[in-house]
Length: 184
Image (tube, rainbow, N blue to C red):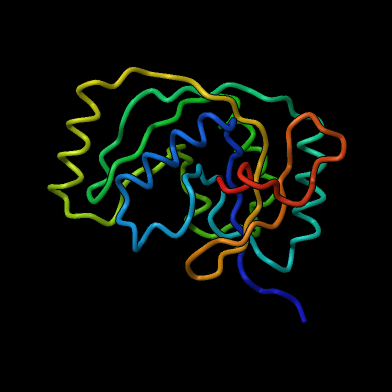
């Protein structure tokens, strides 16, 4: 029997950035709704029946890719939440290339323009989101982090299940998720 739970692809942050993003998410996201760690989603719904093709492709890509830097350039008010806006031409090219390779499989959501972000608050009243946005924006200074790989997950209707970690620059990428690092 095949597992038909859709696949999600996210960026693997460097450990320090992950801890910072995830701490903010735990602080500001309603705890009863915060079922997943801080993340930057590249694809929301890849087809489960293509898992072998997807993992083979990601292993190859990761072995050729080097760790690269991304820049958090500001905050974004989501209406009922707040996110960090991420600027990274390299990430956008990587995501565009994958979207081109997988275009026929993509959902409408995954065919839309890619706007990289890390959500730290969501599903709150708009006034609460606006208040957090104003407080954080008053002291915000751009900062950077390293993109170290990709993470593949299965969507289980709530918490995500880690499938594989694809570390950039490693020939044997495609390992079982690492404790801690694979949480993002």
